[in-house]
Length: 479
Image 1 (cartoon, rainbow, N blue to C red):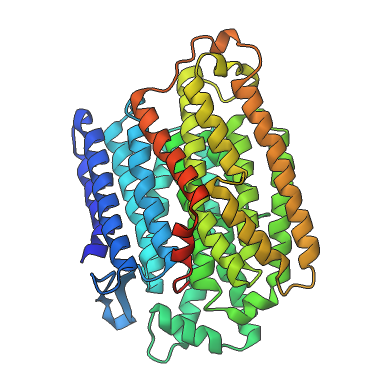
Image 2 (spheres, helix red, strand yellow):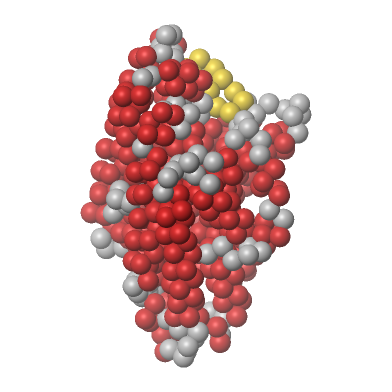
């Protein structure tokens, strides 16, 4: 039952938070998220020490439909995603100690329920259960985005909801079709893999797009990305962290877990098209990031470029590329979490997202500047930071792909590295250096809780940069 608690604890804590007084709910949210992190750490220990404890659970759920409540932490990718989700929420909540949102009981309740949905997506080994948690993760984020954020949040959130909901329905239709082909009418992952692989290629070819579109919207991959920059800009920054550090990983995770094994012939058939779209997304998003003056939109386009490279590496169908993606999914989550927390600090201090109104912060906030420089450089994969090893492995996989266009794809994707350095260094220059402006003259350095969060993020960046074998051992196991 320990693994089930990874879902139940944040879900029940979220329900309880809705009914709690505003004065107590923040500490309650921190406590619940820390408990979830402890549970995740115990499951991680069991996974890395076979025989010490179980990290799987299965119980009949809807027996007439062949659906079970089946969850498992049985491979390195799942472990990484569970640990990222467990770590992100306490860091978000601690960073908010001096920035209490409006209606805190509703805010923290919905955030905890979103964590429960995310945990369910990463742990589910039953297709119907996976779909349920896919929607459970979306619903609280929809309300968070529409209730907290900028003046255009309502239409932007509606667009996000329509995109993801349509994709989800298409995915459900494809899952029902595969379910109907199973001899015993089962939604289990093993049944889906067995039946999916036996389907003729013409069926796999159209089933591939029905599943991939849903996952591509969530990542998002070009041209399904248009909801993302607006959503990141208009959402409250803590909600943007959930969208950017965690929810986009749902799409990548689903491709690895539910698309490639179930629809292998379709995945190979459409490999070049998906890689082409992904690489276009890398270059397009990088050029868009270059011209942004809004810091949240810049990071949003940066995220599209990173995800595009990960998607291309997945479809390289190379083990080293897949392992690089798993490592980078975790590291990108850590780095983008740190960046968004820095953006949250800027918004709270300056009440603006416009980089033209920033500058000179390094002269009065050295600790903030050190964090900004280190985390930003990690996000562009500077050697000896955590972002380097995963990106190196992804490019290795891309270059060794079975695609006849692998050299072109690799070279064009490499352009994204150069552009990322340009727009990231430009962002650092505009925010931290130059002349100190009147609007930034009262900028305060990091508070104690912000120090705690950013020290943890920077420690992980440097630790995994100098000692990446911690992650490589995980993804080498049953990925």
